[in-house]
Amino acid sequence: MNLQELVDAVERETESINELLSYISQQRDAVVNKDLEAIHDLMKLLHSSSLSVYKYESLRDKAATSVAAGLGCDKRLHAICEVMGDEGEQLRFSGEKLEKAVKAVGAESKILKRLIEEGQKFNDMLLSEIRRFEGMGFSGGSSMDIKG
Image 1: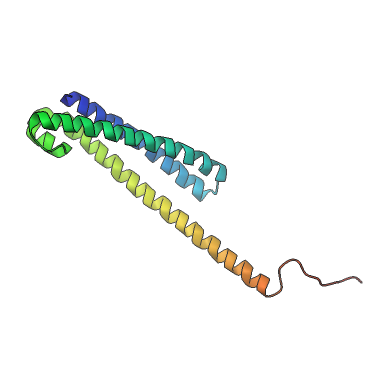
Image 2 (image 1 turned 90 degrees about the vertical axis):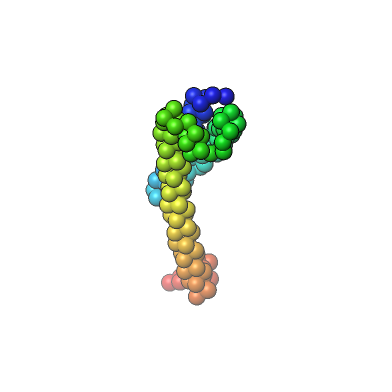
């Protein structure tokens, strides 16, 4: 494989990660709005999108391995760019976009995880309060007769 094929592979991986980021952001909004149907639909899209990311990551890795073998360097994009000098500028730029996309997915995922954890704590607190009331005889299945 040549350098342009590696650049193309990096750009396709970046596009697939940005698509994944879009779905994660939409899922965060759905969690905030408690839109269960949207959350369910987005789970399917996230799964499909993550498979695409893995596919393009594999293609990028193969292309990087091939280019690096031809250059006699490590397969990391930074190492290839170093050896290529000015010729590696497009790869350097594409690699920076990929790195930004990966960091954005990580940040968005942390926010989503925090929201889900907060929701779980809220649900646990409500269930605990309901159980406390049930223990006090407020279970809703009272046998009290208030016929007049």
